[in-house]
Amino acid sequence: MTIIATQLTQLNHLLPTISQQYHRLLLITGPHGSGKTCLLKELSQQDIPYLNVNLYLSQKLLDLTTKERPLRIRRILTQIITDQPESILALDNIELLFEPSLHQDPLVLLQELSRNKSLVVAWGGVYDEQNRVLTYAEPGHPEYRRYERPEVMIFTL
Image (cartoon, one colour):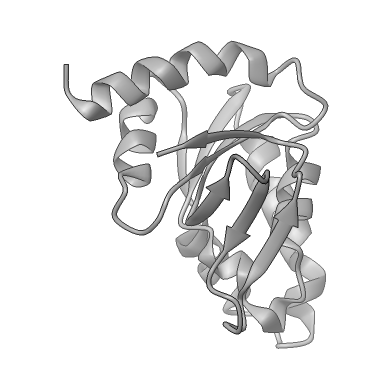
């Protein structure tokens, strides 16, 4: 069995439990090149819609002014998620959510979006299981985020 197939099997065992959580959110964590996108694309073969967040948001935000973008991003994402009839979605390429000029807290935003629909999200960062700390980027980087004891399910690659 390949690594992706093993990870997909493990992920499939977690999927039914997501809908029972307050935040119906599962983050797939791992550094760049760890296989998050491959895993989500394999998951999409099981009739779970795959959404490239960066591509979708950049198209929608293009026509908005710099001041409008932070105000509309939540509504735009809510609309695309609620428009999907499936009860679970796979979100990939979420880097735009960390853009400082958009003034978003990406984890809080994802938690809010996951209240009505289960989301499996590729998180390009690291989860320290021992200390229960989720990070994105490196300290000092403008997009750096650190969350202690995040209230979400995490699947680490």
